[in-house]
Image (cartoon, rainbow, N blue to C red; front, side, top):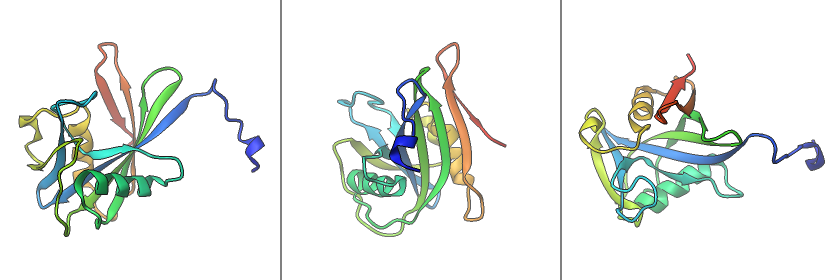
Amino acid sequence: MPKSDQHVDNQRYAVIPRVLVFVFRGNDVLLIKGSSTKKIWAGKYNGIGGHVEKGETVLDAAKRELREESGISECDLRLSVIVMMEVDLKKGICLFVFKGIYAVGQIKACQEGDLEWVNSISTEAIPVVEDLPILLEQVKKQHQDVPVLFARSFYDEQMKLRTVFNS
């Protein structure tokens, strides 16, 4: 299909692509505690990730973010979950969540925050971003033969983030 037939229109719903990576080492997951100077999720734990840049595939972006934020350059990543996050009436986020198994490499510090191996079973004892528990739970359960999960996130009337998975 030619570019002219794509019908990109500012009146249609648009999404911003982002990636999130959970790297596991046994029962532990590598999380980043947002630095106190971050505009969003300062002092809270999150997976490793960020925006997909122009010219990247989502896998390229996940590998780049993992390398930039943790120093891990060798990790077999598998797409686990795709979440459509409704932010407002015209814009949202398409979040591609990856699972990786830590094999080798020195973890290095980054400006985004402090990296920590956290027991993936006991994340309720630490401050986390709102959707981390439900996403981490789903990603932990996935094995090689399990297909990608699809989810929708939205803010309810009390502005609490809700995530619903397709069954």
